[in-house]
Length: 328
Ligand SMILES: NC(=O)c1ccc[n+]([C@@H]2O[C@H](COP(=O)([O-])OP(=O)(O)OC[C@H]3O[C@@H](n4cnc5c(N)ncnc54)[C@H](O)[C@@H]3O)[C@@H](O)[C@H]2O)c1
Image 1 (tube, protein in one colour):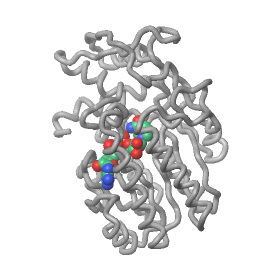
Image 2 (cartoon, rainbow, N blue to C red):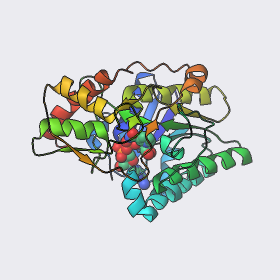
Image 3 (tube, helix red, strand yellow):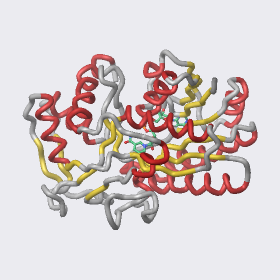
C-alpha cells in the first residue's frame, strides 16, 4: 500500500484529504508546522511537526516513511494579507515549496500533488473559467501559486517527475457530522463569517460591493464542498500512480452563488436573522468566478456529491456550532 506525505495536512482541506486517503487504503503521514493547522484535526494519524522549508527534516521524513507521493497543502492563504506582506507569502509559499521539491528530487520521490487556486486566473475574460483561460493573478498569493505551477512544469520537463496541480475555487463546508471544519485565524472566507454573524449578535457581516454587474449586485463565487475536494485529490493521486502525465485541473461546481444568496441560505439554515452592512468593493475582487471542471469530470471521473449550497452551508453550520466549545 502506498504512503503519502501530506504537507499542510493539519489544516482545513489537508485534514479532510488525510481522511479520504485513509478510507481508500493509503497511509497518510501528516507534516505540518501548525502555523495555521491543528494537532487535533489529525489526532488519529501520524503527525510530524515541521516546516516544509526544513530540508533535512523533509528528507529524513521522506526516507524513514518510504514516501511514494507528496501532497502539498502547506501555504499561507489570505489574499489581502499577501498584498500587505508579500515577502511572507513569497517565502512560505514559493521559496519553501522549492526546498520541499529539492528534498523530494534528492530523495527520489517524484510524484507531487499541489494545492493551486482560482486566484491564478485573476479577473476572467469569460466564465466559466477553463484551465486554458488566461493566467493573470492579481495578488502576491495568486502569483506564488502560479510561480509554483511554472516550477513544476519546468521540473517535470527536466526529469522523471510528475505532478497534478489542482486549482480550487471556494472550498467550503465540513464533514456532515460537523466534527472537522474550517478554522482560519483570521477567518477571511464568506461562509464561516456569515455563520459567525448568525452565532454572535455583536458581529456584523459586511458585503463588499453591491454594484457588480450580477443578478443582485454582489459577487458570485463557485463553492465546492471540502469532501468533494478531498475525493478529487484521491482520484488525481490514483491517476498519477497509474502512470498518467502531469496535468492541471479546475475543481469547482460550475455553479455560482452570490454573496446575498449565501447569506439567504445561512439565514434559512440557521433560522436566525442577523444584521448586514454594506462596504466598498475590495481591490482584486472580480464580479464572477465560476469554474468549468469538465476536464476533472472527464479525465479523473470526478463527480461532486454535495453541490447544493444549502447542503454546504448546513454542514458548515454543524461545525460552526461546536467550534468554539472545542477551542478553535
Ligand atoms: N480554502 C480555500 O478555499 C482554498 C482555495 C484555493 C486554494 N487553497 C489552497 O489549499 C491549501 C490548503 O488551504 P486550507 O484552507 O486548508 O488552509 P489552512 O491554513 O487551513 O491549511 C494550511 C496548512 O499548512 C500549514 N503550513 C503553512 N505553512 C507551512 C510550512 N511552511 N510548513 C509546514 N506547514 C505549513 C498550516 O499549519 C496549515 O495546517 C493552501 O495551499 C491554499 O492555498 C485553499
